[in-house]
Length: 235
Image (tube, rainbow, N blue to C red; front, side):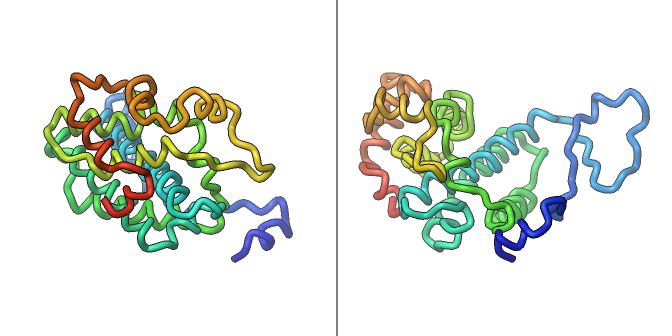
């Protein structure tokens, strides 16, 4: 179905088939109701991290890697239709899933996380969403921030002695993200970001992502080894 078909009746409501509601089991004072799709969790922090480090991380990775590979495309579903981009995004999400498995032993299974990744990639490619690369990737200072999806996942990987090269690749692609909205304008905050940092990856890693070069020397070396953001796709 094309976007123009959705505009025929402005009162139409569209929803995804996804119908699971994750919530904090400990917040219930009364017995938990038996409702289909309700998913109470004991360790809510683990599931919040799953949302941040797989869903949010994967969504942003699609925007950043997709823009790096083909900057003239508009929609997330367009870049994920490119096998090289979709494959790289999946690798990035899988690397983050490995972090979650080690950080929260017993909370997740590999099969559950792999199925979740496959489901998310399918949902991200839903043409009906009309989700733009600009919307998903913009607000760089926040999305590349110290505790957010990419930097936060890398810090967890470092603590757990796990690889993070694919996540770092997505982050570097984000440093070069310059997508514009339908009116040909970047987000005001991103214009300021580019003015401040340009293509200075070391400065972004230090000031925006919160990494210390002396403490995280290996990360800075890896970032330098990756080189330009397009080389990430073959790294």
